[in-house]
Length: 174
Image 1 (cartoon, rainbow, N blue to C red):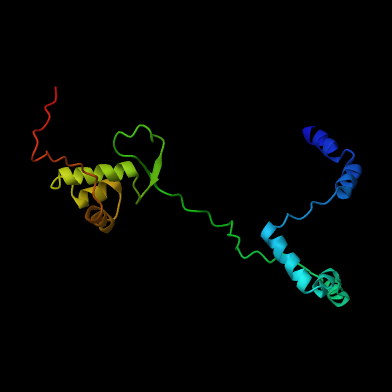
Image 2 (tube, rainbow, N blue to C red):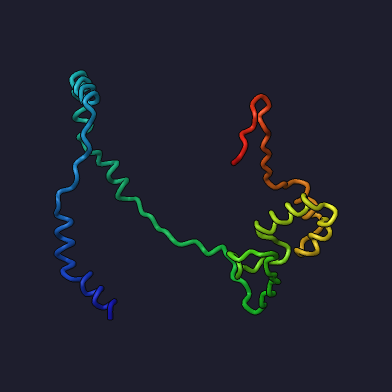
């Protein structure tokens, strides 16, 4: 029902509204910069034949314009439609490790880890390298061993080190 009312309002007095829009004054061109006006006046005074050339219509060019015809067709779609007969294999998901309550309903595909898990395993490996080895991490998070080795080799967690001032006494906390 709402679409019919909308269509009725949209099409009401359509011809008169279109005629009114067409008969409105067309917008004028933007004003020229004062320095440009001076230069144009100067050129017109030097060469008065230019003014006639500018306002004259060239019939030969207008006939060329009338001969232009554009025919456009949509190109054939280049995307191939997948065969609907073959069902997709279901992906294997796993739940997050640890106490991440804010992302509780998040399922992670096998072979991938979340940011929280990456930071946790990097921190655990840094604190306990003999207990948290690359093989154990790969097994626990269902990752490939080469990926885990690259992760442990090239990524480190942020560490803040505060050095006490050398020349001043440190302020004692209360």
